[in-house]
Length: 165
Image (tube, rainbow, N blue to C red; front, side, top):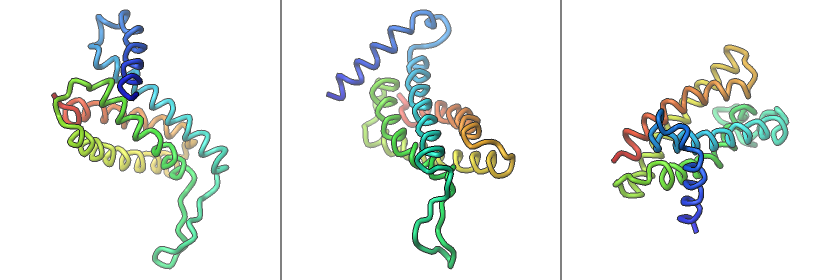
């Protein structure tokens, strides 16, 4: 079933590739398509989570840490919700559609992907906090700026580390 899904996704993406053939290798085009789709979904889920699920309210965890109530701000909780969907989808797309020629074993790819995603989570956290809390940028716009920075880092790391040939 998953093979059929990844092959179908590859066929749809490859259908749109010919006009870009002179400018981009197929792998880069697939990364842009898969990553772009997953990123758009991530931003959409972030927006829905922040504005409608969380209603722009802090999430009170119901316990204390160091004598203070544990609270997650809505812009960070929205990131966590979106991440829970985009992480497994991103790994699946990268492993089966974009970097399907990698000779590394699946568990090695997954371990490296987890390392990379951990770095990306850290970068997302830092940039969202910086843009929202220090620069006063609206959270969804901050998420978009953050995404541009993190996606550039992520592509280079995935191509040269996670799914290395």
